[in-house]
Length: 159
Image 1 (tube, one colour):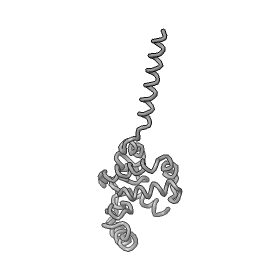
Image 2: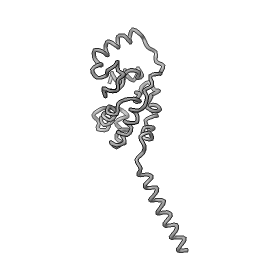
Image 3: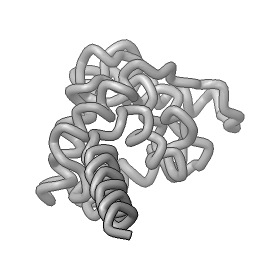
């Protein structure tokens, strides 16, 4: 009987030790990034007009943005609360993951060619300094504009 209780005790202790180590392991960047899919879409490509695509953005830009949400210097109704739940290491891992994803611009949006020409002129005058290459560049660490959902861009400009 003593042998059986001792064996059970050892097995329980081993199970707790192994379980604790498994729970303490840092989640992978892909696993952390999956939590963003509900709003930002699979691999960061948004399918909702009020939410930006974050696939393909630069790591630096995402880290700065998430830190600003986390410390409250960049206002948001949702992201300020979400960002506080991540460590700096987790934010860095997610930023690396999303930077490697392909930005999908193949979404169906109705456009007006006259307004697009007017917008291109405004972009060149006011936005090109930070959002290079017509808003497509990721090398400027300022976020991707070209190909984002138009309602999202309108909401952001209004904010």
